[in-house]
Image (cartoon, rainbow, N blue to C red; front, top):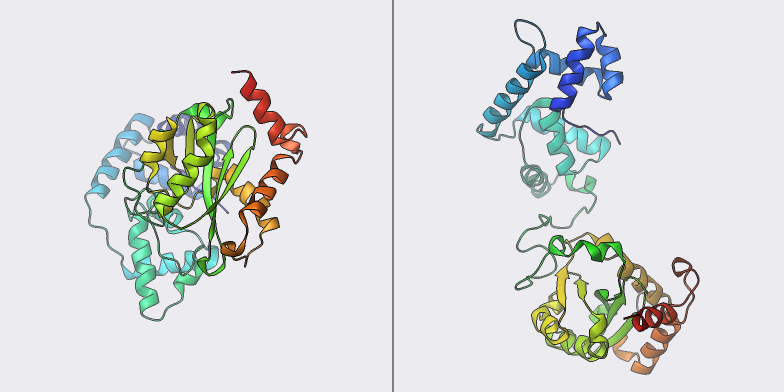
Amino acid sequence: MRTYRRIMYEDQCQLYALRKAGKTQAEISQALGFSQGTVSRELARNAGRRGYRFQQAQRSAQARQQQVRHQPRKLTSRVRRALTRKLRAERWSPEQLSFWLRNERGLSLSPEWIYQMIWANKRMGGDLWRFLRRRGKRYNRRGAQHAGRGVIPHRIDIAERPAIVAAKSRLGDWEGDTLVGTRHQGRLLTHVERKSLFTIISKLSRPTAQATHCATVHRLKPLRQHVHTITYDNGKEFAGHRNTAQCLHAHVFFATPYHAWERGVNENTNGLIRDFFPKGTDFSTIHPATVAKVERLLNRRPRKSLGFQTPNEVFHALAQRR
């Protein structure tokens, strides 16, 4: 997929120097990494009476951006046709289409407006929605108050999580999620320690926030000194996270909706658990002893990422250093 980027002040300085050196537009575009059309538009938009000068070009671009900000955002028929062609041919996301319009045509149109156009087309019997990556699913603006599977009171976003967690340089940073059985019959609560891959699996008696909180505290409280943070999915079952954090003296964070890679360790472990309990399993019929057996098997399994040590070995070795 071809990507676009805006010409910045440093690019304008280099463009000015290359023009002074007598380079052609083709040579300039190759040197700067822009298309020849982008260079041509930059020269046409921001050149003055004395030719192209980088300081003047910067002032001109800033003034034009300020003007565009205050213009009404309108989906004209011409813009609709351009967006439709791009969506069908290249399957770009509304966010990518928004950037393309701003960068190539100087038109400020938010991704939300483009989504609105697509949903309106669907209501009229159109098929534009089929070209979206998550076609047929309602759009959730990332970072919005109501994003995710439910509203989480006092939710603390992963952006506020300490940087040391991402580094996996210490023991005590966990990720959590739930596995749902077929027809929502039963759930498994999973917690995975990021550095050691040590896994805890709990069968939930009920799919409620209170049951999730109790199961979490029951399993993690004996390890409380090795629990610094927990990063959860955005399910409503984690709505009692403040009580959980208080009981464990830990900090609880929530991943960005639809960013599964932010809990990659947990997602990968859930896939391993699915090897034992494949899709279609009714978790309400699974005995807790069977769940405990799977937990033991995973924690005793040598992992390549751990130098073929087991999660048990790594967890206990790191715990003894404290």
